[in-house]
Structures are given as C-alpha cells and as structure tokens.
Image 1 (cartoon, rainbow, N blue to C red):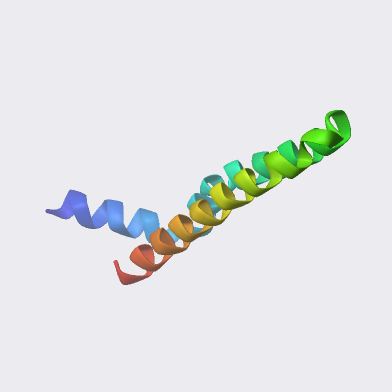
Image 2: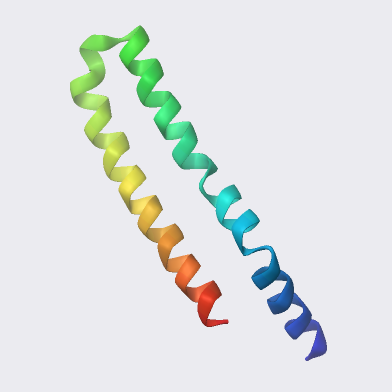
Length: 72
C-alpha cells in the first residue's frame, strides 16, 4: 500500500505539470482552427463548430480530472 500513497503524493506534487500536458490537445485544436482559417476560409463554418464542441468536452474532462486530483 505504500506504493499507492507514493503515486498519490507524486500526482499531487506534479498536478500543474499533469494538467498542462493534458491541455496540449486544446492548443493543437486552437492551432488547427487558425490553419483552417488561413488555408480554407470557406470551410470555417463547418470546421469551427465541430472543433469547438470537441474542445469544450475535452476541457470539461480535464476539469473533472482536476477535481479528482484535488480529492486524492
């Protein structure tokens, strides 16, 4: 059981790093919006809502993970 508590302590100490790594896909989605706007402006009406919905879902998931880490 001491191994489990070591992992929990490590996760708590590195919480900000873990959350930053988990937010990297959001940065990628933001860059993809900019690239779509630059290369294919006629597709912006279709792509942006889809990417935005996926981004919101992912941010909510990361928020839920953050709450679970705080409860540990």
